[in-house]
Length: 378
Image 1 (spheres, helix red, strand yellow):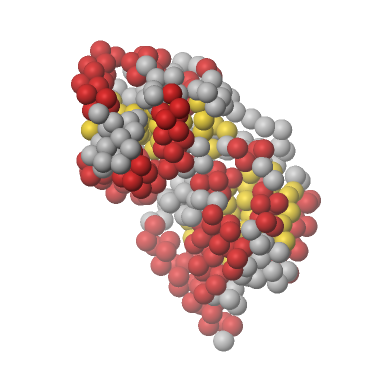
Image 2: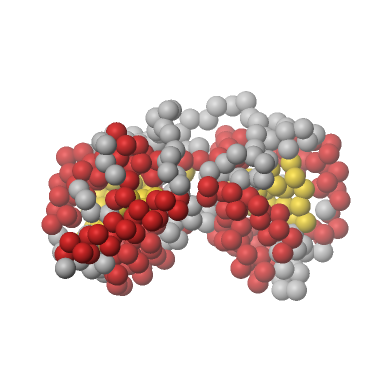
């Protein structure tokens, strides 16, 4: 289905969401027609944030908003759906558009398999009626489905359109870019070199894929790295949990701006505990680049200032490899919690692969390596 038909059938004039590669046609359409416009389109920090923004829109206008997201974000909406939107509370209706990663029978990455299996079950548990949109779905069929949902929406209930792989198409080619010179893959290469044999926790998306390929190219073991292939926004918390329990080991976290935004409260917890053996590197390209390049608000933020306000003893921002190397070297010698923001261009190699080891194997190898490091220091 053409995304223009999809949008016309829905008939809403406000969208908010977290970008998803499976919904790239919709995301690109919204960016082309609205950009970031608080009246019509806002990209939020996380899916719960979307629901709250959409609820505010409904309270102000009486209209029904649209919230778009990947199915991995369903967990983030459970609380506001149950305790804010539900008809037993405020009866606030909205239309969810959910990209169905890991649909049973459709090949996908490990982090999407179980989420795909429970996508529809979670909607049922939240009492959200749904319609599945596939490649063959027509505008008329979608219109009939939406007409059938009008009674539920009028009663203050929410509904969902679950979008299968390649179900939506858009003919416009949106290009996202910024003025930064450094590339994420090269930044990660410099981090890996500076970390040496220290363990690294890397964030969701292309950052972990690039780290994996850098290790392979260097003929290094993957045991040094924990690849956070799912649970976006939580890599820094994982790194904190490791750092405080392995105080004799320096731990490096490779994070992204979209991930930091998604659960920014983690920075306050990290700062309050200020483990002296944690180096938190935030690669900031101001974009959700892994899922298509749509912007985040991080391009307008002072992340080091936020880190310092959260209690990080040291935080800096770099724009060149020379500055990056200087800060990485100092971080490796500093006995204090450190944040380094690395300003980065949008984009990645077209032939970037995916990890070839299983997630459980990655976990086991990483845990064994942490224990090996502890034994060395005894």
